[in-house]
Length: 100
Image 1: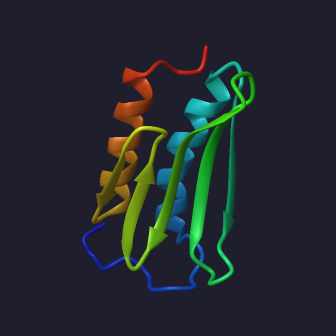
Image 2 (image 1 turned 180 degrees about the vertical axis):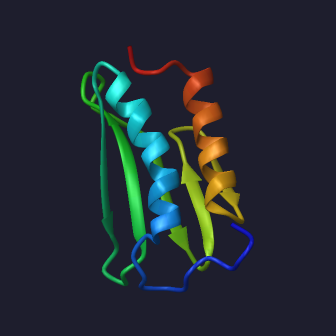
Protein backbone atom coordinates (compact mmCIF):
# COMPACT_ATOMS: atom_id res chain seq x y z
CA UNK A 1 0.00 0.00 0.00
CA UNK A 2 1.94 3.01 -1.24
CA UNK A 3 -0.83 5.56 -0.90
CA UNK A 4 -1.45 7.60 2.22
CA UNK A 5 -3.64 5.77 4.76
CA UNK A 6 -7.18 7.12 5.26
CA UNK A 7 -7.68 10.11 7.50
CA UNK A 8 -9.35 10.44 10.85
CA UNK A 9 -12.74 8.91 11.39
CA UNK A 10 -12.69 6.35 8.57
CA UNK A 11 -13.19 2.62 9.11
CA UNK A 12 -10.64 0.03 8.01
CA UNK A 13 -10.39 -0.10 4.21
CA UNK A 14 -10.76 -3.39 2.33
CA UNK A 15 -6.98 -3.58 1.93
CA UNK A 16 -6.40 -2.92 5.63
CA UNK A 17 -9.04 -5.49 6.55
CA UNK A 18 -7.34 -8.07 4.30
CA UNK A 19 -4.08 -7.48 6.16
CA UNK A 20 -5.80 -7.67 9.56
CA UNK A 21 -7.19 -11.06 8.57
CA UNK A 22 -3.60 -12.32 8.82
CA UNK A 23 -3.73 -11.50 12.55
CA UNK A 24 -7.17 -13.11 12.84
CA UNK A 25 -5.68 -16.32 11.42
CA UNK A 26 -3.04 -16.36 14.17
CA UNK A 27 -5.82 -15.95 16.76
CA UNK A 28 -7.82 -18.82 15.26
CA UNK A 29 -4.77 -21.07 15.54
CA UNK A 30 -4.03 -20.05 19.13
CA UNK A 31 -5.64 -21.92 21.98
CA UNK A 32 -6.95 -18.97 23.96
CA UNK A 33 -6.41 -15.79 21.95
CA UNK A 34 -9.26 -13.76 20.58
CA UNK A 35 -9.37 -10.63 18.45
CA UNK A 36 -11.76 -7.73 18.79
CA UNK A 37 -11.99 -4.74 16.48
CA UNK A 38 -13.87 -1.50 16.91
CA UNK A 39 -13.23 2.24 16.66
CA UNK A 40 -12.66 5.20 18.96
CA UNK A 41 -15.26 7.88 19.62
CA UNK A 42 -13.47 9.90 16.90
CA UNK A 43 -13.97 7.01 14.48
CA UNK A 44 -10.36 5.76 14.30
CA UNK A 45 -10.25 1.95 13.91
CA UNK A 46 -8.43 -0.37 16.30
CA UNK A 47 -8.03 -4.07 17.06
CA UNK A 48 -6.76 -5.92 20.11
CA UNK A 49 -5.59 -9.47 20.58
CA UNK A 50 -6.54 -10.69 24.04
CA UNK A 51 -5.21 -13.76 25.89
CA UNK A 52 -8.23 -15.21 27.67
CA UNK A 53 -6.15 -17.54 29.84
CA UNK A 54 -3.78 -14.84 31.12
CA UNK A 55 -6.46 -12.11 31.08
CA UNK A 56 -4.29 -9.59 29.27
CA UNK A 57 -3.97 -7.78 25.99
CA UNK A 58 -1.23 -9.23 23.80
CA UNK A 59 -1.34 -6.57 21.06
CA UNK A 60 -3.23 -3.37 20.28
CA UNK A 61 -3.10 -1.98 16.75
CA UNK A 62 -4.77 1.22 15.56
CA UNK A 63 -4.70 3.74 12.74
CA UNK A 64 -4.07 7.17 14.24
CA UNK A 65 -3.20 10.28 12.24
CA UNK A 66 -2.59 8.22 9.09
CA UNK A 67 -0.05 5.99 10.83
CA UNK A 68 -0.35 2.54 12.33
CA UNK A 69 0.39 2.32 16.03
CA UNK A 70 1.21 -1.03 17.61
CA UNK A 71 1.36 -1.49 21.37
CA UNK A 72 2.45 -4.58 23.31
CA UNK A 73 2.68 -4.85 27.11
CA UNK A 74 6.35 -3.80 27.09
CA UNK A 75 6.88 -1.72 23.95
CA UNK A 76 5.30 0.11 21.04
CA UNK A 77 6.02 0.81 17.38
CA UNK A 78 4.73 3.00 14.57
CA UNK A 79 4.50 1.89 10.95
CA UNK A 80 3.75 3.97 7.84
CA UNK A 81 1.73 1.24 6.08
CA UNK A 82 -0.68 -1.48 7.15
CA UNK A 83 1.37 -4.23 5.53
CA UNK A 84 4.46 -3.10 7.47
CA UNK A 85 2.43 -2.89 10.69
CA UNK A 86 1.10 -6.42 10.24
CA UNK A 87 4.57 -7.70 9.36
CA UNK A 88 5.93 -6.22 12.62
CA UNK A 89 2.97 -7.57 14.62
CA UNK A 90 3.29 -11.09 13.22
CA UNK A 91 7.04 -11.18 13.83
CA UNK A 92 6.50 -10.16 17.45
CA UNK A 93 3.66 -12.62 18.00
CA UNK A 94 5.68 -15.49 16.54
CA UNK A 95 8.78 -14.64 18.59
CA UNK A 96 6.69 -14.61 21.80
CA UNK A 97 4.75 -17.77 21.07
CA UNK A 98 1.40 -18.21 19.41
CA UNK A 99 -0.87 -18.59 22.41
CA UNK A 100 -0.74 -22.38 22.43
